[in-house]
Length: 238
Image 1 (cartoon, rainbow, N blue to C red):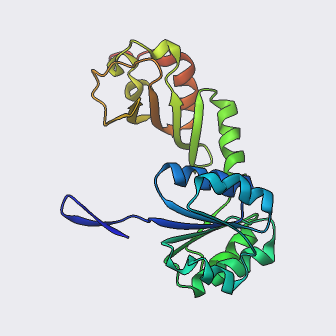
Image 2 (cartoon, rainbow, N blue to C red; image 1 turned 120 degrees about the horizontal axis):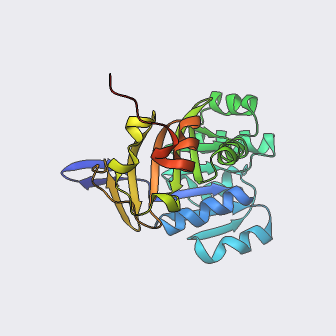
Image 3 (cartoon, helix red, strand yellow; image 1 turned 180 degrees about the vertical axis):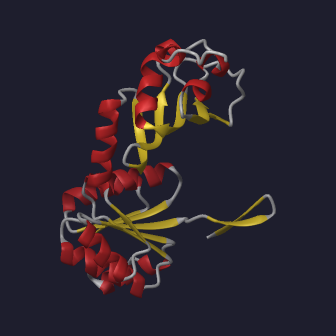
């Protein structure tokens, strides 16, 4: 769906169909509803349907591999289709194939393994996600850097981390923390309540509950967040 922004056409989905309402599917449905999307949720389990019915536009009990059912629910009118039934390989593949046959513009499919993901990609899925694997990666990184609340891996030992500012950061300016001088890190933005501060000025003072988005090596991130600028001695002048 195209929307105008600053004189430009920007594509933003409005209608999303979710097939499969396990923990991942339900969580996705909740979040999309909160973001204002029109969500159609489909699952064979009556209990799962009853759980999501209060907060989606349409909740239907049925088989996601039934083409007639999908057409009757106007899934073919969706901007995005999400195949969240990753545990049943046959159902996952069939549903992905059906959504592409129905010409849903963007199909996102959940995979349990790399081989499953490769198969889904070959039959036309536009994006493959691995919720269990990605959650495990975030957990592993959060054990090493205890302040991290979310993480995107860029390599084996580096990534982008979101973290709540540690107590010993509060009241200090970015120049006092001096992360670029002592660490191989960059602060991408600060989230302060509903406000987003992009490319923060070095005079910016860290406040309680600020969320920081950092990018760099895990080791530097852990040392910096635990001990701040005092973690490394200043480089002596020649």
